[in-house]
Image (cartoon, rainbow, N blue to C red; front, side, top):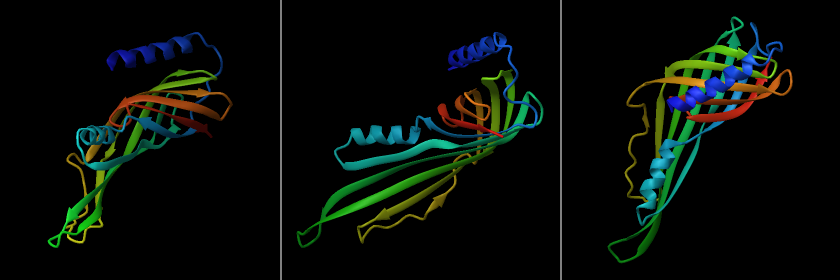
Length: 205
């Protein structure tokens, strides 16, 4: 991971040194980055357990995905937010035989949603008319919400749980935006404490 961070940073710095055009972003710029990332570790773990079982279980998941916003308070330093969402769920179909010997088909469904809202700071170390590269740090909330459902009338539903073992989240990231117009571009970010790799659209105001 450290080698990958260094390779991306070195490539961005080299590109910036060799490019003499006017910077694309500067003090006062507002940037919005909707993105989708991977991997979804919860879904990966659930898939591993399911593949080793004989149960009829379907695993689903969304994300990690989110929205970043940034305001440059100087040409090289920006502040903003990062909203990160992901979910994982499992639905199991099974059969039970009652005391009269009658078979009944049931479905159990469990879902987990994770929400992280972080305050974000970015230092921009490469700025050209096409490339904006930065290192970022974020910290904020870490909330998990669990829901359960079943068609089995004898199912005892646990209390819906909201919370996490560690209620705070931290992210360290290295990112780049590639602009192909004055206001529209693509973003890519590599980080820890959220999606390992994410990409999306960048909109600059």
